[in-house]
Length: 176
Image 1 (cartoon, rainbow, N blue to C red):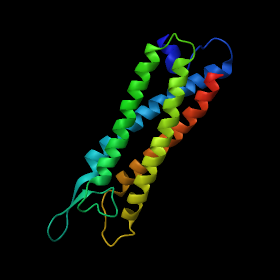
Image 2 (image 1 turned 90 degrees about the vertical axis):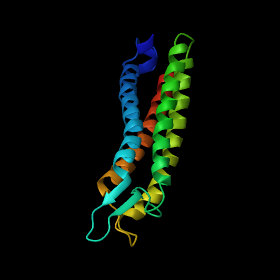
Image 3 (image 1 turned 45 degrees about the horizontal axis):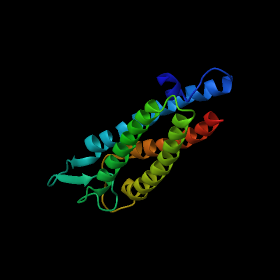
């Protein structure tokens, strides 16, 4: 029952549902990995970034915020909240699916709702992060550090949106 919930329901029958269920497992693992990676990378590599210079040491409160990252941590906090809440919602959804695993298609419906909400959540999160992070790539008078890590967080955020969007489509397939 538990494996069936995770892969999207009953696996006997059409090969299409089995394939969709297998892809669903990979997407779920990807969603979890991104939900963990975004806050961890943000916390370890983009918050309180010290830059060596010939003069006094320069410290950026958040290298993810191209508008006010020298003084404000708002975008770093935002990125950590987006990933953290995504992970928490995923765990709650999984528990609900396990608790309702034998009640018709309830687990699939719960999973589909989570996928749709996750897609919207990451679309908003990735959009906001992109809006504030892009200026840090050289369009401001301040030379922001950590370009690689900033680009990685943005890429992972958009990857999460895509993974949840594809998961939404698969959820519809698995409901039929």
